[in-house]
Amino acid sequence: MKKLKSLWKKFWRKFFGLHTVQWILASIIFLGIYLVYFTSKKVIHGEKIFRAHRRKPAIFVFWHGRSMMLSPIVRRYGFRGFAIASRHKDGRLMAKIQRLFGLRAIFGSTGREGAVSALREGVRRLNQGYILALSPDGPKGPRMRLNDGVLYFARMTGAPIIPVCFTSSRPWFQKRWDRYLIATPFSKIVCNVGEPIFINKDNFDSMREHLEKFMVKQLHETDAEFGLSKIEPGELTTK
Image (cartoon, rainbow, N blue to C red; front, side, top):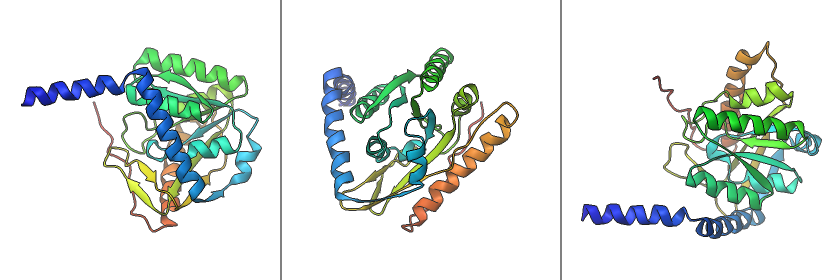
């Protein structure tokens, strides 16, 4: 029985990893996100920052668990750009969803070679005037802990880092490492856009801690609008 269950799981993993199947799933999720978007009331705090950077290079950062409703908001303001995506099948599915919203993928990985490749491509696209979107605690966490990649993009290009967070009056939190928030239809969506942050060689180390603390506080304050339970950063692991 255990062997049968194992084979069944392997079959579905391969099935959902198929290119055509993923595009079908991406289209269904795309329509589902727009159903929530169009049936919900939207409030954007810091909208002027979105408008000011619509045609300028910028790095939009958000925690991995708070990505769902940012895609249609980005499309609403007409941003042209790229998103960092994992090569894992979940990452490839997410890249297809983002492509439907107008963001093309730059594939990277946690390995050194993949990370360097993504860094080079991201820098090139920022220098061409595009925006870059990424979650600095992805793809595997720990939750709400900043990795250094976003800082290197900013330091090497001079592009500002703009922290973004959203919450919902009717959330469904998945039982995952990132406490992924799924907004439901007919709710109120609040998006909070932080002031641009610039990185240089002199403030690199101090701004890492500042940005992480700011993004954690941003999420807590945004969730507090609906009295949601506070989500804390995950435990750091040591090797």
